[in-house]
Length: 116
Image 1 (cartoon, rainbow, N blue to C red):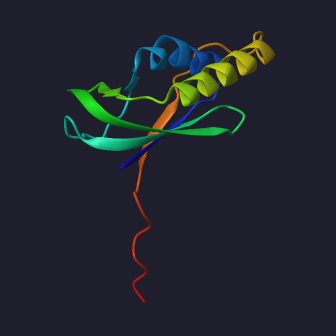
Image 2: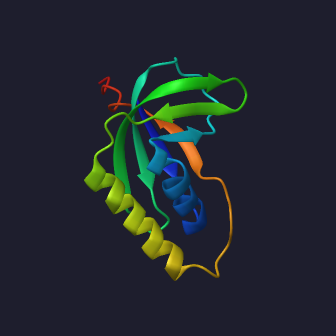
């Protein structure tokens, strides 16, 4: 299962990276129900289009709100790249729009087979 998280502002991206990911997790507002402890790939897309892939699992499902996802064994180098990117982008757009929740959606793990 792949979950794509597309950020529209560096403020939101930076807040999630420094406030949540640095602690090993992330809360995702997602309407679709996933199973607790389900493994998934989370693709974070920064506002400038750069993407980061994280392996995680659903820690908690909060009905009507979303998912708490944890990233056990989050690679230190990847986390540092995320934090640097968030700081760099945040500095470049400090006067830009604030807040804005990211767009979160489920993607298929692989394309549907061609029937034809």
